[in-house]
Amino acid sequence: MITEVTGQYNRTAQAVSIPQNTLVPKDFRSWESDFHFQDSWHVNSTLTITAGLRYSLLQPVFEMNGNQVSPDQHLNNFVSQRAAAMEQGGAFDEIISYSPSGKVNGKSPLWPWDYKDLGPRLAFAYAPNKSDGLLGVLLGGSGKTSIRGGFGIVYNHFGTGLVDTFDTNGAFGLNTVISNPASIQTLDGRARYSGPGMIPTSSSDGILLQPPPSGGFPYTLSVSTLGNPLQQITWGFDNNLRTPYSETLDFSVSRELPGGLTFEAAYVERFGHRLLQQRDLAMPLDIKDPKTGVDYFAAATAFAKLANANTPVSQVQPIPYWEDLFPTAAGGGLSATQAMYQLFAQNWGPSTLGATNFQNIFDSFCFPACPSINGTPTPYAFYHKEFSALYAWSSIGNSAYNAGQFMLRSRNMHGLQFDFNYVYSKSIDEGSDAERVPSFRGLSAFTNPSAIGPYSSTLTKPRVMEFALRYSF
Image 1 (cartoon, rainbow, N blue to C red):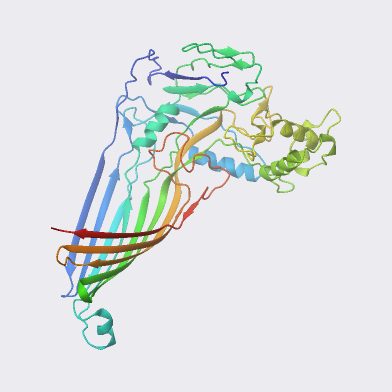
Image 2 (cartoon, helix red, strand yellow):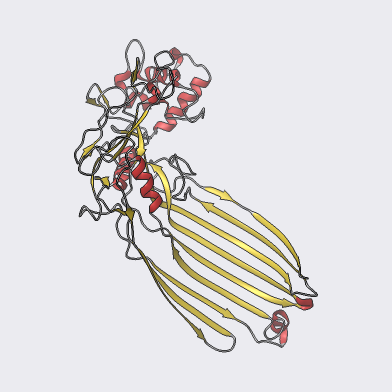
C-alpha cells in the first residue's frame, strides 16, 4: 500500500526546467578570513601574561550561477509573530513566497554578514618562588608549583551544511519537493504497489503525485482552501543567523611531588551561544483561549484522558476552551465540546512517529481548525496555510560545560611511566545540533515554536577515569 509519493522538480532562476537525469548547475562558494594577533609579556621571572585577539570574517555562502532563492519574508519575525498571536488567542498566517537572492543576483545573502566576530584571548602562567613558611610547604618550594589560567572567545565556521539542506529541500521555485498529504490516505482508498518504477499519480482518496510547480518569481506554493492544509513538509531559512561562538575558561594548578610524581588539578568551562538548532516554524499552534487562558495542549490533554478511559461522547461535559473557540462545531444534538471530542477520539492513537501521547491530534482531520473551510478563513487555525512543517536552522541554542580534571603522572623511570586521569563534568545543552545532521534528524528536529526561549535541554553528568601504563625498551 502506498501512502506517500514525493516529486522533486528542478528549475533555474530564469524558470527554465531542468530535464530529468540532468545535473543542476550549482556551485556554492564563500570566503572565510581570520586575523590573529598575540604577544607575551614576561612580567618577571615567575609571571608571564599572554594576550591576543582573533578576528573572523565569514562570508555567507552564495551560488555562483545565481541559482539561489530565499524567502521574501523574514522567517525569524514570522515565527515570533506566530507565537505572539498564539499567546493572544489568535493565529498569524502570513503566506511565504520565494525570490532569487544572493551576490550574483545583486540581492541580499541568505543570512547577514557578521562583522563583530572578535575573539579576545587572555592567559597567565605563574610559578611561585616561595620556599619558606606554611605557603612554601604547600607550594613545595621554589619552582615546584605552576598556576595557569586563561579565557577566550572562539567562533565556529558554519554555513555549508545549512545551505545544502535548504537547497535540497526548500529552495522553492528552483528545487521544489512536493509530497501528497499522506495522512488522508485511508486503508481502503490508498493506492497499491504494482511494481518497480510504477509510481501511482492518484488514488481514490486523492492526488498522490503533485503536479510540477508553475515557473516565475516571486514563487508561492499553492494555499489550502479546503479541509486539510496541503501538508508540505519542507525546509525554510531563518535569515537571522549569527555566527555560533563559545566562551572558554580554564584554571589549573600543577605540583611536583616526591618520587618523580606530578599532580595537576584543573577546572574547565565552556559556554556556547547562538548554537545551531532546528525548529519547526509552521508547527500547529498551541493557541490560548483569551477568556480562560487555557492553551490547546492542556485542553487536548483533558480530551486524551477522556479518550483513554473510553468515555462516551454523551457523557462529556462542556469545556470552556472548545465552547469559546469552536462554537460552530456544535450541531446534531452535540455541544461544541462533544463534537470536538468526537473528532479527537476518532483520531486518538499512535501518531506518525509512533508516540501515543502526541497532542496535535487533529492531524488527520483538522475541521474546524484548518486554515480555511471551503475558502472561508477560520479564526483559530492550528495549521499554516502552506506548510504543516517548515523546518529551519536558527541561532538560538545554548550550552554549558563544567569539568573538574585531576591527573597524577610519573616521570620516566627505567623505561616505565604511568599516568592516572579522572574527570567529573556536567554538560547542559538546550537542543543544539551540528549542521551535518541529516534533514529531520537530531536532538532538536521537533521543537515547538510556541516558546520564544530555549526549546529542549539535555543534561549529562559524565565521569571519566583512565589509567595508562607505558614501558619503553
